[in-house]
Image 1 (cartoon, helix red, strand yellow):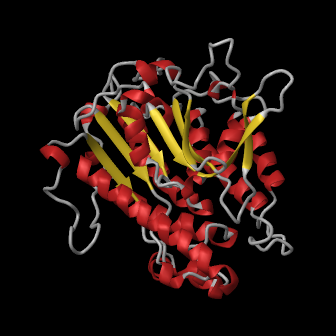
Image 2 (tube, rainbow, N blue to C red; image 1 turned 135 degrees about the vertical axis):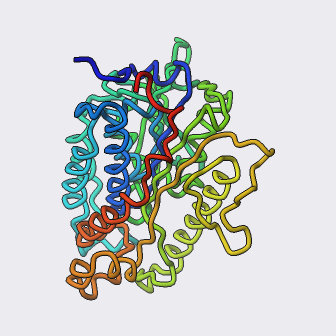
Length: 394
């Protein structure tokens, strides 16, 4: 029996007719477990809408899946056609294997965690030979990183029409993005400063000369830890060569976060507090700006209050006409919320609960998953996913 929806190739997802659907996944270390909790609810809703086929995947529905850092890991897994359940299992294993603390690493003189351990896990998940241009990717993939040696944000994708996707000039020696190993692209996006050493990717290679290598760090230190705005720009700006039509009826963007946190409860050590807290504060500011821009550009059934002055931007639409339909899912990741939602699990952690918003705390993973599973069914509504964005024949 055929599926009650079209199972498109990657190229048709990227270049076929609209309307188009984008999924954007934030960075946030192990707090990506919250993202997966929301994705469970989204996958279940969309699967039921499309015939309840057990083979249904988010890669069937979304034409582009974008991710930064931990969101890049999840995005790449989904783009390969994994179910959310499969990704969750791999993510939990990866998290516990990678974030095993070596107390000789302080995050100041040496990165806190061993990059080789992360590389091994990513190769296990994605394979050593799978490239960004691989046909194993079932839909569009956009990974946000930052090239540290040039200071440039780098969106890397599998769009065949992209300027740097394939080098067809025999006199030029830059490496095609399509040939970048997928695990390296994801590793580059998740090389969070103080947590992991930067990742090197060979950019230019010509006979008789030393290869030019770019040094990449976590995309979260660009303005796009929440990659929703970059994904929208990627889909609609002519320079990226997707040329998707904007408009609330033409474009749906679903954005999933890794928890809203309160920096006043930050437990960063005094020695590192200045630099790290400043970086976290900047990332929070960028995240708020991205959410403000997305709500200003769109019509949304899930808009949140940005601040006490602007509210949720109800009635404020840039240019008077929304350029997309936008959904955002996130939750408050605080000690108080944990106790309210899952008191038994929360109180069992004792003093460790004070560190719930840390991006590398494996001991709070089960609690975070339980919290989001309590909230997600009440947050993700069938009415938010308008019928015009259904896959054909659904």
